[in-house]
Length: 476
Image 1: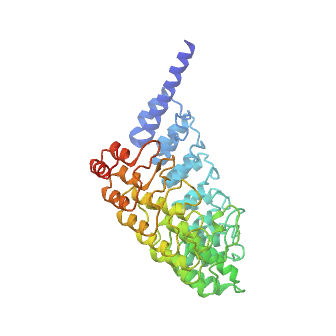
Image 2: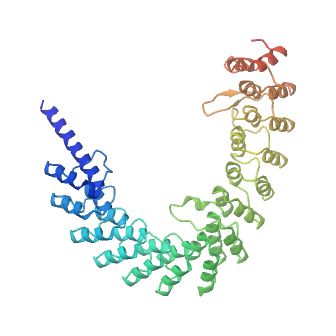
Image 3: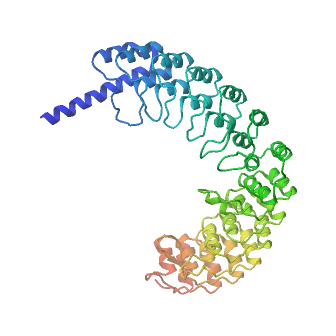
């Protein structure tokens, strides 16, 4: 009985909180409802059913309705309650309600509350200079560091020149926060020359770029040629070939083809791997590998034309990402091995899923692809079965002409389902392919778990295929 009473009481509290929250969202129209619920005992600080749910004070602050906020505070609402990584002050900042922000600050809101982002960082993110000034005047710490760095780092990355000026005047630190890139590095990446020059003129050191990128690498990643040229003209020592190559890698990573071309002209090496950075495993790839991996095919083409080495796993990425035949042909001419690790299996899956153009298969065959090589796996998916299953007639003909084993059994899915090319075609009902395979010498009596191609055709009710197989003497 006691437990039942406690359950009813809990349900009542949750219901009251939900009603209070909904009324708070209504702003002016909900104030009388809120007053009535609070007088009836509703607690504005109750824990909601959803742990990420805001409080009524968050809702009222976002609406900008000061009388509602006053009422909630009178009944004990916590002005600094943190829900879903933000306070009511944060909610007002995100809604850009300046009057509410000022009211909450006078009511005791913590201007430096930090759970994810500080109020100042949120204000910078929103781009409102009057809110940024209000928070700074209220004592906001201009150099607090969050997961995005400092407020100046955020303003620099977002090209907000006006806010950069305000933050600099408030004493923003030009140095790189521990574990982050410097504000100047952020500006270089953004490609915004006014932001970059303002921070540089304020005394930023181009050598103090932070943990992850040099200034030149950041500019290359951003792809602004004017920025890259300005940096190169401003440094006292000419960058080494390795430094230029590292910058080229970042340009390739983000598909900045013009920047890649310029850096090659400046002497960057296309086959030099970038400096290793903890936690960035993709930097183990060459510029060509990262460009292909990220689908920047124009950049990949330029790198190949400049002599990039295509050895290693770049061909596999190219097949997966759907590179053009032209680029794959260039890779093969630049050292890519058509019989390298995972090439065959990647190609087979691509054919099976109709993601690989027939021209690419032909190109690989012309450059020495072993049509029957299943990467050492005796039951691995063959190219011929991969093509026969989804009914790719011209590809089946191409593979047979190249010497594909018409009777090779292969696993056609991750669950070990085994089929010969004939079984796969019969199962799919591709009668023309069945004809072609029979003419090529397909074994009609081959079986898997006691089932032949005829059985698969019958199971899937492909009457024309059943008739054809029976006509050539196959018995059920």
